[in-house]
Every structure is written in structure tokens, then in C-alpha cells.
Image (cartoon, helix red, strand yellow):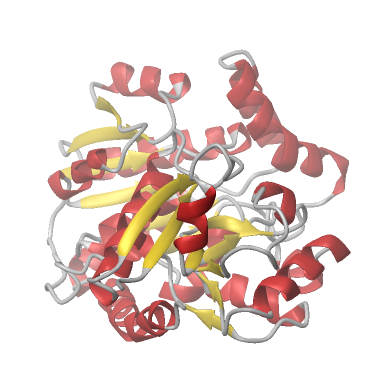
Amino acid sequence: MNPRYLLLHRALRNAGDFLIFERARRLIASVHPEAELIVAKAWLGLAGQVSDDVLRSCRAIVVCGGPGYGDGMAQRYPLGDVADGPPLVLLALGSFVVPGTDAQLASERFDGGTLAFLERVRGRVPYLGARDAVTADLLRQNGLDGVLMTGDPAWYDLEAIDAPLHTPTAVASLALTPPANPAFFGQAIDLFEAIAARHRPARVTIVHHRGVQRPFARLAVGRGWSNRDITGSADGFSVYDDHEIHVGYRVHAHLYATSRGRPSYLVAEDSRGVGVHRSLGALGTVGFRQDADGRLARVAFHRLPRLANAYRPVLNRLGLPISRLLRMPRVSDELVARLDDDLAGGFPGHVQAREVIRATLPTMRRMIEALP
């Protein structure tokens, strides 16, 4: 009898979550072409989504990705007692430490409930999948073993993985992605204006991954640029195929472009971006200061993104004054110079990043081959 797997995703609105799931499903199908893949939502209980008979027939429940490792993990995946049903496989989860300074990452510890949950999961499967080097280190420093750094599913385009890197010598088109956190808005506006000015008259598009961000939509209109909203599916990522360079804050724009052989520069807002830089090489920079701490920093980095998403556009206006209070670093000079160097030098860091992706694919396959 062919194996049956239940795949869980967290794709609600953010285009990146749809890309993660779509590419995870393709990876699993490439390793287990005979398997039947059933799809359900990770944030809902299983009882209302699949019948008991179907659930019992599944060899494993596979959580396909996202920044899932962290406190409250058992509540984030309401699956009941993981010792009762099919084994739970955490395919390629990441972590989410805000903002993700070196000191924070070195001292981060899971709460007792999360450790107990992961130990129960680990007791039934050989591996815990980590999508980046930061997450793999975090799992190990919390005493967990069987950790595989699989890479993010989104950085594997199996059709383009061996294609040569696109290496322009001039920039005719730029795709820009805004930050999620309004605390970075001032920094981002300065960066976007600087890089567009350096490569004028390049065609510029601001791409929105989770709803149109009004400050950046207005910026685009004022500068004669385009806006593109790709919320709600993975289909819109093809916009990056139509632009030579991506610069911005969206991790999965960066991973998609890199997977397709298009140069991309990521500004890390938090540990998700830091994890990408430590895995593929620092193709971009970190957008926060290493001494970002104190009460204002904690509120800005932890609370402001959630509040802004809930109460736009009012709280988005707080981004610029908060940026100034936090003394957010200026990143435009560094990235403008980096792109100039790469245009002249053939993008060696991006060539290396694609080599890392190819070298990591066997580890992802090893993780999938180990499915029960």
C-alpha cells in the first residue's frame, strides 16, 4: 500500500508561507512519488479537517516549514498528544527571535513545555529539521539532538537549481520589498531611494507580500514606480523573474530570487533574516544594532509589528519617529556599494550561495527519506 502523509501548512495571507508549503510539497513528492499527500491547516485542530480513519491511515504528520521553534510551540500546533497519533515530523522549521542580536541568540532557551513537546516528537522520529544555521544552533544549545540543517524549502527550485546565475553588468529593473516592522520604515525608505537613484532610470517595483503597505505604496506613486501585491498565494513570486535585482526585507523574496539565479540583497529585521545570512552568506546586511535593547527596543521590535498589522495605517506613522529614537543604522551606503562591486565582479557571493543550496539538498532529501 502506498504511504499516506498529512502535510500541515501555515499559509494564511503571507505570500512567503504559500511558497514554503508549495516547495515543501514538491520536495516530498520528488522523494516519495508514490505517496498520497493530504493537506491540512497547522493552526487548526485536526478533528474538523480529517476523519479519524484518514488520520489513522497516515504514516506521519509533516509540518512543512515556517518559524515554528520557540516558546508556546505545543499551542501553536494544536494536535493533541503527539504520542497518540501518527509520528510528527518537523520538516524544516525556523526560529523567531526579535530582533536577534548575537547576545540574544547565544542565550535563548526554550521553556519547559516546548522542550517537553520537542522531546516527545524526537522520541518517535530520527530528526528535527532546521531551516537555517541559527535554528540548528538554537536546538542544539537547548540540548536537543538529531538536528539536521535542511535549508528552507523555499530556497529549493528543483528545476532551476543547476541553472547559471544571472550576472548583469547594469541594472535595468529593481524589485524592492518593504519591512514588516514600521521601526525599519525610515531605514527602508532611505535605502530604496538611494538604490533607485544610483540606477536611474531602472524600472522599479515595490512588491507587497502581506497586504499593501500604504507608506510604501505612496512612495512608489510619488516616485513613478510600480506597486505589486502578491498576497495570498505563491503565484505572484514570478514578479521577481521579471526584475534583475531584488533588494529588501522579505526573507522569501530573497530566497525565491536566489533559488532562481537572480541576485538578491536581504536586510535582516530579526533572527529569520540572520539565519539566512549565516546559512547562505551575508548577501545584504543586518538592519538593527547589536546593542538594540532596553524597554523601547523591546516594545518596538516585539509589539509594533503586531499592532501596526491590526491598526493600519495609524500606527505605521510611528515608524519614522521610532526609527530615530532607536538610532536605526543607515544601510543604504553599504548596499549601494555592494551592488556596484558585484556588478563589476560577477556576484561571487551569490555564486557561493547557490553552491550552498546545491550542497544542502542531500540533507533535505535525507530528512524526507526518513519519513516513516
